[in-house]
Image (cartoon, rainbow, N blue to C red; front, top):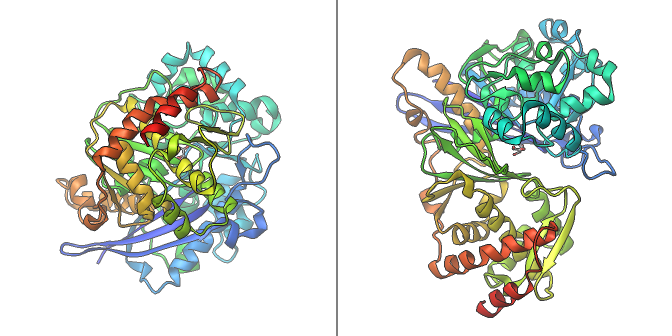
Length: 538
Ligand code: XUL
């Protein structure tokens, strides 16, 4: 029997998935999640983020991720699963977030003492106590400076896969260097959350993979290595503080003696960690072009595999490296689950009442549109949070439909740059269990939508990537399709088909929705007359 462990450190929680892959057996053995706010309240986070009066600030305590990893590994050892059978481990983490370590951290990692909690051995070794994460939108100035220094937006997007984004690691590093030069000077290593957690597993500074590396505005997408011009434009001496970039299937070490002695894990191989979205690509079974995945998590993301990088020069989306060695396109929306939750709690509804309300309101919402920008939005770029409403006044029920329709219309509109015919969508993330939301998705996109068997496709993807790397050693002909078969296949019974009339209605509504977005952002006329037409049709 061979077991593979996948971990995913997301904004709000840490999930572990263990799978078994044998010649004639493949199964999900265990999936378990640890919520940061609930299980580690001493860090004072809300939804995994430190509260701040400025909605543009998004930072988390890196020690909380250390504590969570230790807690989770202990929990796995006590779960009844024979962890000694784990052959390989990999993981993923929220993208773009960065961890700043001083020069003592390398020695601490190399000499971890199994008798002392991990968190006590890492405390005091950070040159920056908090980590900026993907929800941070405070680096507009640094984005402009880096863009200008490398020769403009188009050049930056062509080279790195994305124009400058405020949450991307390069602009965040630049801001740290400008605001606190001595703390920057004192920084020996800057990790992504993914390579930081891999370092804790192996007991030495881990490299990072091109999938997560391409979310930094620092990596040359084609060369899969640092782009010197962007690195120099970001901060002095940065090259020496960055990890090396390795192929996504690389072994970056074995589980350190800390994990072996403290919890009884074997010296399993540790495979390079990546970002949650690249890992989800594998966990959603999307190892070849032709299908899209939509993840409904803290962020909502639309993504799909690309055999060749088709960079979005309009500046909406990103091209990242994929775990298969190819590429992936992605568009990210910040107002995902927290916006849905905002509407639900404001109305005092349970999730099942939320679904029921969605099902009982008319598609098109009688010409009501809401732009649910409860926090700053990434797509389209909105720096000051505000909820905009258009069309007739509604009640609570119309708000439920409005938030879901706006999210789906926005995803369909802003993923067009990926220029693909979509015939099937694989839905993942917490809200993918909600069939009423999947129905709106199917109707807006005009395609069938399937739900995936594992709740957390990033953690499942990590386990599958660990298996791929380990099994490829013995069988060089092993394909990615062989690896994901049976485990990352959508559930046939979960299929939701689009209704042709409703799809036609949403197609007509799309330009009206786009006009509302443009008006709310101060770059378009009042869409009132078009909304009246939608209302009459509904
Ligand atoms: C992707 C992004 C988010 C985070 C969330 O670009 O910013 O999806 O990865 O974990």
